[in-house]
Image 1 (cartoon, helix red, strand yellow):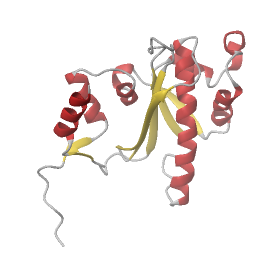
Image 2 (cartoon, helix red, strand yellow):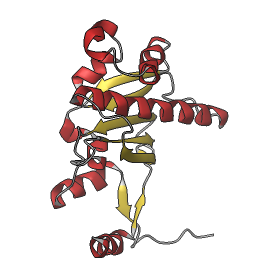
Image 3 (spheres, helix red, strand yellow):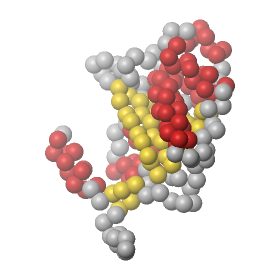
Image 4 (cartoon, one colour):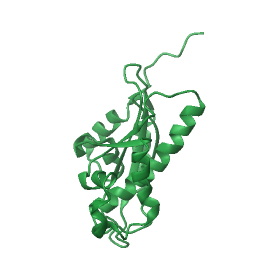
Length: 189
């Protein structure tokens, strides 16, 4: 496995994030698998945030709480992404950047978890979910974040939670705006 990682790093060392002026704003996306860890049955979630089309931060990791459904796993992932979004929103504001911050849009591919962020009607099925995750509803109500459905095949965060074959990896690299810097000329002074 270590040899495979080193080979991957060697083949991608010339890639860098590219920011394009034609894409404006700030947005995020979140995804989770469900219970993929065979030993612990914990889920993996990940999020990405983009500014002007280029990725500025990302994280992937195991969830601390075992989810009882895919909707719950995705909801936990949205919770993690929302905490990061609020921190980034504050940071960007302190730097004088305000575009796309009211609300911050976070994309996801699980319609059940997205509905849960706005509708507490699922009480019987979700009353066991810790209060630390239900703050999402408050953030939606106060218009600090909004959630948007995106098909799995178009969701960039999908690449953080599942193994990628060659074609999917190439698409993931493109979604992140990673481009080769190997043939670029240095800036002239």
